[in-house]
Length: 109
Image (cartoon, rainbow, N blue to C red):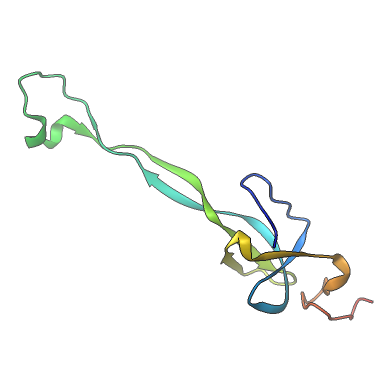
């Protein structure tokens, strides 16, 4: 299995995915997740019961972070698939067809 850590993807390499026999894929990137931060207090009135007023609070920001899954594309195709990085197995260029993406196809020699 490929041991791929965040920030260490190489889109020039090709893989097969465990459970997907016969096709080669390349990594397009990490999935992305939106993370919402908690609302924060903006009221500075010490006599205010902040829990009773929505006006005392501002919405937290939304950050986009890398997810834990990878977006891959079958060689010769353009549809993205989401896979677990642990399911990827590195293959050599001679193991797949660069035209159709099938592992074992020898159309290109």
